[in-house]
Image (tube, rainbow, N blue to C red):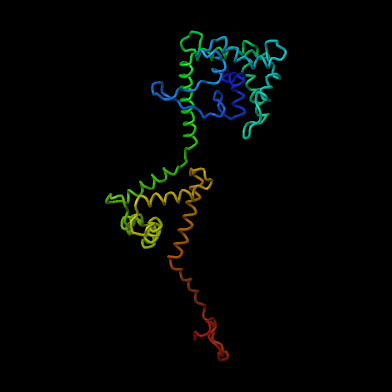
Length: 339
């Protein structure tokens, strides 16, 4: 961890590039990240990191340990303003400011960068002296060189660094895939929704012809009678609801639902459900969609089920007969023209 932080903060070209362009350290500005390439695949080789090209000015295809150390310590020497062989926290915090780093839209603020650098300083100050001494700064750089120098000849050659860069990119890709998999837990993509609907449709496709007839689709209405129908809506209501859905999916109205129609309907439902338009359905979006569908179904049921007659009023107790004037109009409580 300390080595990683030091390499990020003291390697001036790498940190400046990462802070100002938003690209990973070691990736040339304006170039897309290189994809791992098998050595024997015949494809273009993995690009060399910028620091290798900048150190190997003689184009010998190798970088010596001393040259690597001098290059990596360049920022340390610049930060050591009084040239006492150590860097104070005040000097180290200069890494948060230009020319070492600058504000980038969507990137960390100056204070956020300073906080990160304070943490890095504490990790690098091994003896807690309040300074990063030259030996403390050099140790992780020497360790990094050892990782690159796989044959231990005190030189980093092009084949060595290309192989390491390839492995690094493969590891980073695997990490990104793992992060994406974690992020997507509980989310449903369009292809997954289509697959789920196809599997449900296959259960109804009793003759396995890849299509669903009205008769097959009516199986979704459930049992007409018996113990399994207890607590369900009347069978004729369920049949009507199922056929409404069938007709929505059957776009060409030929009485058959095929896979293109199922796919198109799944896409329609997906677009309606994906409220934040991130191309995934989360649990909240699915819940809202289901609630909206349930409300539509309730409205349909209300139209299908006749309104219940109001309960009859209880009989009034008998009243003693009294003389009353002869009625001159319709009976009380009845509308006109009903006598």
